[in-house]
Length: 238
Image (tube, rainbow, N blue to C red; front, side, top):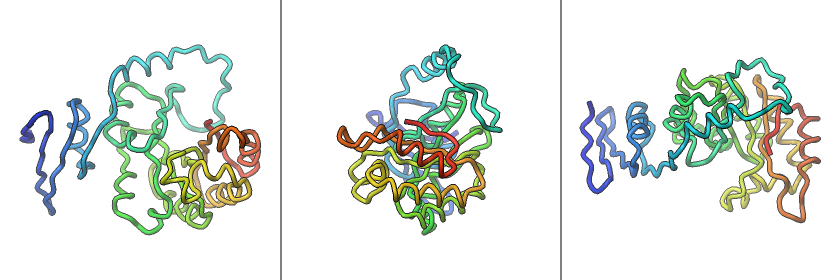
């Protein structure tokens, strides 16, 4: 029932609430736009990802022969083994809901800055909105300061996510220049401190996302995986 005029494919929506702001959606996907409006999570320019073949891909991986994959050691009730990767700028609330409608077994949020969360940043908290129909869902955090990472884990104990995930895989320059993301792979000692801080402050299972290494001269996924296991990490994605 929302009047949303479209001009050259750009939908302009002015939402009237305690505050007035405009939402500009550059989208050709009606369902994404409806979800964004419904949950009022978009108060900035949106460039949604391609929605081609989402349902087909989920169906494909649900039926893939997985006899060699061990059963997850978890109390989570997973309908299937299709997990949505946590991807910055992609796995926001509307996108996750669409994937859930297509029977995705496990959802992940975009990565969230632990330090910003500790400082109670409003835009960061908006990224943490989780709807009841999403479950099970994981929240991913990133950072390289054990104090802030542990603090974020403690804050997220009160959130409804089933799993807390740590990002040590992001290669984006704006992330690694601060020593975060995959830059931690260059510093196993600091990585261990970060992992211990998060596991020690989280009441939920903690998982980890890494790369095979920082670069071709530093391939240390096995070393990091062993450190993660010693620190109490429940699962690893490479």
